[in-house]
Length: 244
Image (tube, rainbow, N blue to C red; front, top):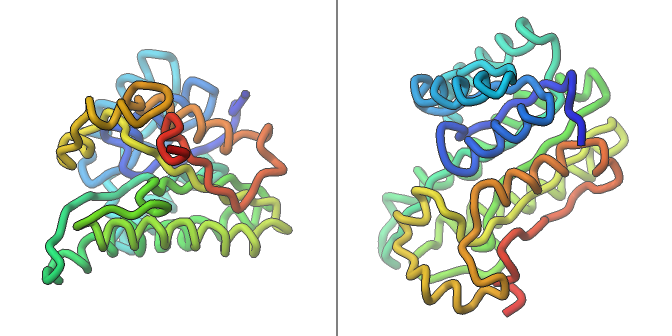
C-alpha cells in the first residue's frame, strides 16, 4: 500500500487506535493531521511520526465544536491543499443504568453527531476533488449490543448506518466510505470498560486481545486505492469473537 502524496486527518488521535492509525498512515507516506481535544498530546504523536521521517501536524479539534472543525479544515487545506483521507475515530465510552438519562446526550454528541458533523464539514472538499476515502470507527457493540451501554451501542449502530447511507450517495463522486468495527483492543477505553481479559480471550478464536495496530492496518487498507471497489462495508476486526 502506498499513500504517498495523500493528505489524511485522524480524529481522536492522541492515543490508542487513533494514534496507531495516524502513525500507520504516515508510515505509508501520507501527510497526517493529528487531531484531538488536546493539542499537546497530539504533538507527542507528531513527534513519533517525525522520528520515522513522516510529516504531520497537531491540531486541537473538539468534534462537538463546529467552528473548531471548520478552522482545522481550512488550516489543512491552506497547508497541504487538499484532504484525501478522513478517519473518524474520536469517541467515548461509558456505562449507564437503565433509568439514567444524563449520559445520553454526551455520548451521542461525541460518538455519532460529532462524527457526522466532522464528515459533513470535510466531505465537500473531497467531492470537489472527486476523490476521498472515509473510514469510520464503530464497534462490535453496534452488532451485538451489551448491557448498560445503551447510548454507546446506539451511537455505534448509528455510525454503521451513516456509513452505508453516505457510501450510497458518494460512490459516483469517487469517494469510498467504510467502517471498521473493532472488538476488544488494548486501549485506555478497554481498561475503562473493565473487561475480564482472560474470560474474553477464552471466547476469541485468536486467543488474544487486539492491538491498536490491528485496527490501523485495516484502516490503512480501506484508505488505500487497493480498496477502491469496497464501499459501504463494515469490516469487523475482533479476532473472530462475533462468530462465537
